[in-house]
Image 1 (cartoon, rainbow, N blue to C red):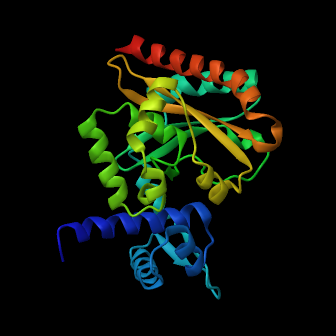
Image 2 (cartoon, rainbow, N blue to C red):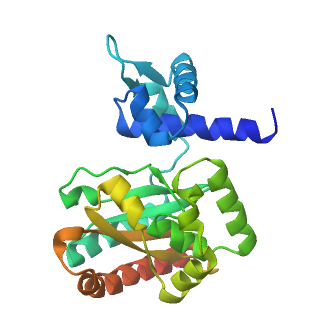
Image 3 (cartoon, rainbow, N blue to C red):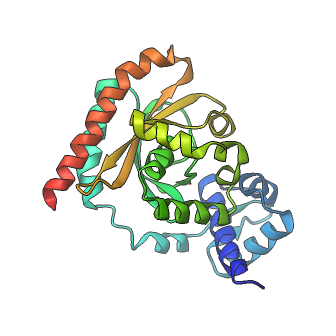
Length: 261
């Protein structure tokens, strides 16, 4: 076994646990579809998670769910962090102004993590709730974060994302012309989620635009996106109304956080 194999095994185990947590109850076939790993690999990982007490198979059924033990995995996460204390009310106020919900996401090793969302107000059952890990290159929040990383940090983040085995960060189509894409994001100050990603995850019911939240040193410490129903009207017209308020909210959050330091 090479030194790479244990890392890949960990990433796959976490991916399966997330799939069961976010989509459960799920069958083995469901997990295969969500993760894209071979069925034999999924079965082996599920057996390990069951043995460790994080997942259980429902009695008399072929479906799996997480156990209460998974709650211990979040004990180290500070839900009252300064970011959420500052950002949540600003984002909620913006929601009232633009009429569309938002996500706040932060970078974590190889993915973006949704740390706050008021998306329930959209009135649809949408995947990707708080705590979900989402791709770097297929999401607006990921693109605005990656675009503003220093080159070495960006290379490491993308390498870790590819090693995690996720479909979207290993998609050659998305990676084509990445340098030009990131330059455009830096120039425009915002990014859109990939259309094929939106089709696969949301059946193209929404589109999303994201902007960065900068720290005082110019690094991106989080990003915020707005989610808009595709049937709501012309995107250009809606973007003209949404983007200035989204950018202003991100700037307000950044300024408030900078005042603490």
